[in-house]
Every structure is written in structure tokens, then in C-alpha cells.
Image (cartoon, rainbow, N blue to C red; front, side):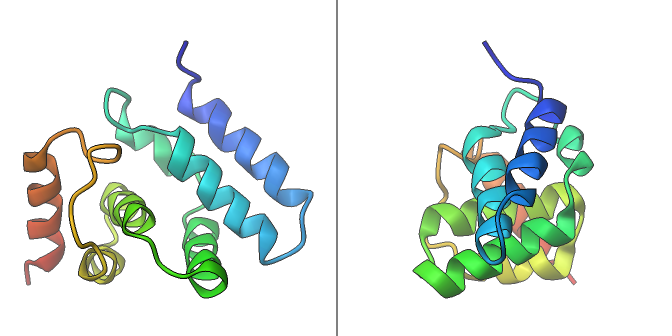
Length: 119
């Protein structure tokens, strides 16, 4: 059973609000990044999420625990969905390999990375 992404966004916000920073934003990013597989769902539904909180969560996660390729992929995909080219370019610069848990196909990864790196 797939949970509608809108419900997942609301759940992530509720859980994050119960924790002080940096934990709250990290939880927000982790919940949406790990449970919301945008493959097969409408990626635009992610736009109901708080983009600034996702960015803060990624930054806090990176600062606290270091950077993982999976989280770099997740963040790059989120930036692509939000249409934030500058953030996507930076996120893709940290991606070592595309992750099939994030990207539906290698072509979807390449398309997003090419968009981010285009002038």
C-alpha cells in the first residue's frame, strides 16, 4: 500500500515539529527522502513539502553525520523536482553514482543532471 505523498509530507512536518533543531529538519529530510519514492508517483506532489526545511535538513544531516551518496542523490532529485537549478547543480556535484532507489532509470538521472549543469 502506497501512502499518498501529501499525507507523508504532513506526517513529516508533524514529527519534525516535535524535535528541536537540528534534529527536526534532519527528520523531515530523512522521512521524505527515504519513504517518498517519487518513481511511480507524481513528483509535483513533493512540492507540498517545505523546500527550505528540506534544504536545512540536508545541510544539518551532512554537517552532523557526513555526506552519503544516497542522501546526495535524494537531495539532487528533490532539487530537480523543485526546479532549483543552483541547488541541484551543487547536489549533483556530490553524487558519485546514480542510486536506483532514487532514480527510476539511468536516463532520468542523466536528464536531471544535464538540466542542473546546463547554463
